[in-house]
Image (cartoon, rainbow, N blue to C red):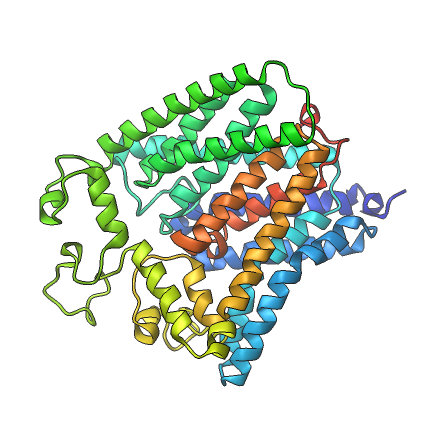
Length: 465
């Protein structure tokens, strides 16, 4: 009898304990906003999620040694190396220990969750139950967003499903991740119409959350999914019935869904409404022009008109594209050792335990302010070597998922997880820090990616994988 199936007491086994812990992680992630509304701070919810994952990892090590345990260690290597760089440089620069601990906690978040779910002593049957629970929780998000729209209209400040009350970026990132799985299901199971229905409901969460980028990701993600499907079919030499006809039906469905999402966004999102008086104020004349100015605005842009100075008004910000460009330029202008290894992990971190909690540390230290991905901070904290290591971790994950997909070409999980890595890369380089810091995206992503990596030929879609 396997150690994971040995009883601890009565009917309790390691496998059942692991399943309960994984279920708890999923539940807390997806009702984070509900807990916030009830009075539990999101920071405490995140600690709870990480604690549950740590216990799950501990339980996993009580079970039999598996190849997944070695795979988790190999996959973790780039992030562990980036952590060492950040901590060593921070120590040499005299940073406080709490700063280093918070940095390590942040950058090692994927290591914790991926290792926990990769090594969890959970059978195929129980994994399918966990995926069923996740599907129910996703349906809950759609229902809550529909109710929110009926009662309050579009709003990015509250009730992003039941996931969050404050991190509006999740209103884009979580639907983006789910879209990949929905369209992958349509291609693998040849259920294009059903997949389009799922995709439309999922994209509506982004629109109701007032996320303008939904209208661009709605077509981009299914096109990426189609590209992966075609490439895998070619390299795995899969004989599909009428693949051209399938692709045509798929493109028609994607075009239809994208058009509905785009038109819906233009109608219900105020900043995209053609009659928005701000267009004239900002000197823009169309939606595309508005988005261009929004992404590339400088401190003196009409969008940043203010009666107070830039030092006193944190709403005076750079556009995402311009901020990223200037961050790259500034990092390259530093002395070579600093450009390569940064100023130390946590140098730009804002946290209530640090002196610059809730402050404007990025602007105070490097003169940049505005929405950005975690890449911007990492350029100055762990330097270009650290950033390359983080990107290497994503590349390693893509490589392993592609291998899993070639072994099990009908795995919806592997298809969806690959597009999710693209969402993770988009957020890291350009959009926000929410995939790493929200306590919502990374645990869900890690579970799906880990289960995809654990799904071999014996765990195909027809059996629930």
